[in-house]
Image (cartoon, rainbow, N blue to C red; front, side, top):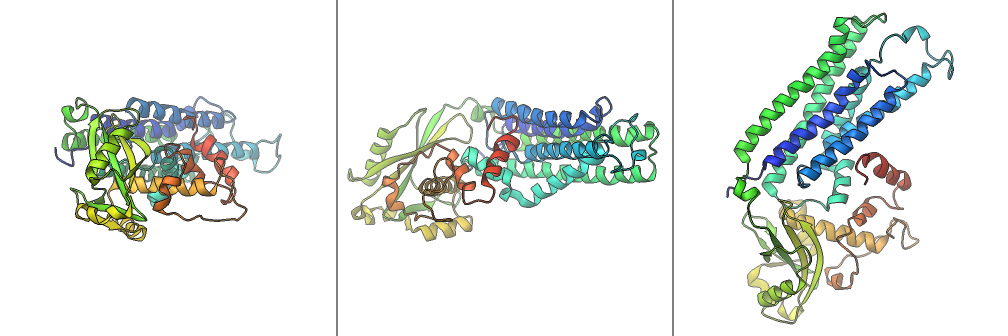
Length: 438
């Protein structure tokens, strides 16, 4: 199979649906402003943000949560934009309310007979959020939050890059659409709008134009994703009918050394990865037998680490650590190169590690350090601010931590050593996780 044939019809459909739901909620606010009063429009805008979360969550469930399709960057831009717009609208309502704050703003600027011109608020805000999301890339809070709940990424190199590039393309498109609408509608508002009635030119600029651009974007992206599927799409027998299996990945460890060798794509990876019939639990006995056969010795220790979904979300990957005594180190040199943690770190920084190994090491290191430093609620275990314990591979057998518990990743990024960490935790749970129950 061509290594670039990595896009399923579900991926293409989910990418299009995410755009349709996210931008559709944003574009619906100017339309709803025609029938919703200014006092209730902030609440309706918050409801639209919640609907985005529910709608996208259903898309993820329908398409088996593939890592490319479940990217939350675009969704977070839309939801945060709507929440920010709701807050701005609420503040404006207060400032223009003579019963609450009399004489703060001139009442002649307000005509209660006219609908709220919501597009003058929502598109500038969306432009700002999409710009910062695009510029921050994978370092954004949306990506960090995604890492905390998915355990980094699963290693479908070609497919993941294709899907991630499309998400960035969507965010870039959202920025330019928002920028165009911001400039054009504010120019029209200052040059031609009269606060007497909403005539046909007003309706065109404030209502029809945003909806028309939204529909055109749906058509263009639909054609694009259909063409991408025809070019990069997986054949049906590869994406749907292939028998399920489990992959046993074994990290070979001796003291503080990790055994690595180049894979078929030229990336450094563990040389020992085998497929077995699908097992939804653990295959520790199978892993022990395979490891003993590989090392030609029973004097080894095999430790289960965690289980993750495979790229197609139908199979799984079971991750194990195989700890060898120092007496077997030289006998394994023909299978790969023993690398120190410093060498592995340099490979990671230069992009020399395989995506799957990158994800494994990220998860193991991050969860281990969080477990050794903080409680499950994010409080410090030791009364020393910013204390960092040591990380040594030789201690892996002693670590009694559940690497399947991804909440440790959240603890690692938000804990007692972070400024305003309780507010951050509240924001992530009730704002970022709006509509998804996370």
